[in-house]
Each structure stands twice: as structure tokens, then as C-alpha cells.
Length: 200
Image (cartoon, rainbow, N blue to C red; front, side):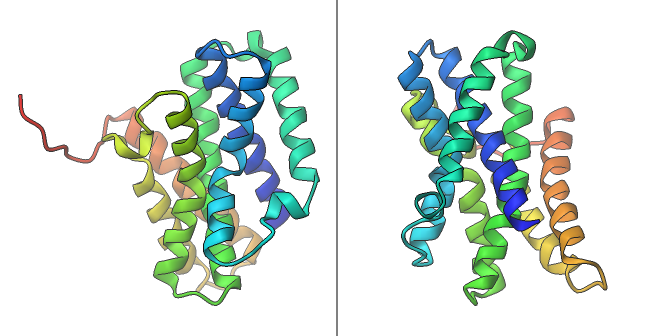
């Protein structure tokens, strides 16, 4: 289940990377690079922080194959998901939900404190998107007023709360990931945002 969630997160982030690159009118090589860094950027930073080297995608070639296949398929069916803003938002949201629980579980496996595990989950979920946005000359979503990292933190907290219940660990994964996804969906739907400090 853990590996499946990791692969699904990789697919979701790769799709979001492809959609951003296409919107920026990049060539095929640019699209592939953006898809790749979006999909593995957060996980790479996470693995480096906990000393898990070589990082996951280097040890398992399947991640590279998944990103390549996802990139090709997304380009081919682009017209089917041509509502770029909506599609990007959806796949990015799914990606952060899945990667949050993967990062938290990696922290638990490394024997880290729950607070650090939640931070690790948030890093896993957010920093691929940060790298993507920087390379695409955008202000990263995490630095805007949208509920993004906050959703990941809530998902991480729910993970530790739910795992105290007599539930199967796979179900805990799914529920915590859904908390992230639903939190972000609700925040965007009802325009819930963190306050900003600025001058008119």
C-alpha cells in the first residue's frame, strides 16, 4: 500500500508538472525535466534530510519509468484534460495528499519525533511544487496565501491521531491523505486563506 501511494503521488505530481510546462510553452525536454523535478523533488529532499541515500528514485528505476510514461500519456491526452487550471489544481492537490502520508511514514520509519515527521511529510508534499514553480518563473504556491502547506500539516496531525484507533494501517494512510485533499478543496472552494501582511 505504501509503495502504491508513493507511485500514485509520483504520477499526480508528474502530471501537474507537465501541465505547468505546457502552459509555459516549453519544448519536450523542458516538459520532461519539469515533470521529473515536480515528481521527485520533495521526495529527494526528504530522503537527503533523513540520510536515506541513494534517494528512492535512484534505487528504484520504476519511478523513472513511471514519470516518463506519465509525461508521454499526459502530452498525448492533453486535449482531454485541457482545462489546465482545473486539472493542475486537481492533480497537485492529489499529489500533496499522497506525498504527505508517504513523508510522515518515512519519518516514523526513521524513528523521528511526530512533529518532525509532520514537517517531513509537508516537505515531501510541497517542495517538488516549489522547484517546479521556481523553474517556471512563478511564485511557489506554498508562499502565497492559499491553504497548501497548512493542509499537509493537518493531514500529518490526523495521521498520528487516527493511528491510535484500532484501524488497519492502510486505512490510516487513505484517511490522512483524504484529509489533506479535502482541506485544500474546501479552502479553495470557499476562498479560505491565511492572512497576508501588505501595504495598499
